[in-house]
Amino acid sequence: MTKSINFFFALLCCAFLRGHVTAASAPALTVLYPPDRSVVVGAGFSHLVLEIAPSVRVSVNLNRRPVAPSKLTDKVHHYLLRLEFGTNSVEVEALEGDGVVAREKRELFFFSPISGEQQIMPEGFAANPFHRPGGAPERCAACHVLDSQKGDLSPASPAASSCYSCH
Image (cartoon, rainbow, N blue to C red; front, top):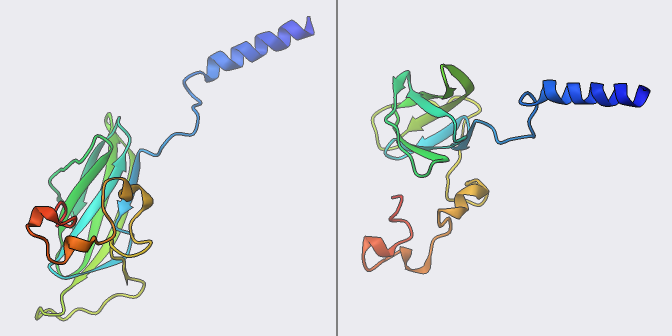
C-alpha cells in the first residue's frame, strides 16, 4: 500500500510539474559583442551582435532612439550603431508575447583623435577590438575569419579579401 501511495504521489508531482520545469536551456538573449564599457575609436560605428532564442523578438535602442533591425540568421542578429561623441547607452530587450523576458545594457564611449571634440574617457572604459586575440567570442569564428589572411593587405579586388564581407 505504501509503495502504491508513493508511486501515485510521484505521478501526481510529475503531472503537476510537467511544463513547469525544463532542462537548462539557452538564454533568451546574449550580447556577443561589444563588451560593456567599451571604447570605440575611429568613424563612430560599432557593431552590436546578439544571439537570441527562436521564440523572441528584439528591440534595440541607442541613446533612447530605436535602431533599425538587422538579421544574419534566425539566431544571430547584427546591428550597426552610429555613435555620438562621448558616452552612448545601448539598451536591448528580448520580447515574447506582451512581456520582456530579458534585458541587457551596454555603455560605449566614442571619441576620434582627429575631431575637434574634446572628450575625457570615463574611468572603467577600455578598448575591446574585435580582431585581437580573445577579442571575439569563440562563437563568432564559425562565420567570421578572425585572423588576417596573406592576401588581405593588397587584394586583387575587395571581394578577394577576407575583410570585405564585414568591412
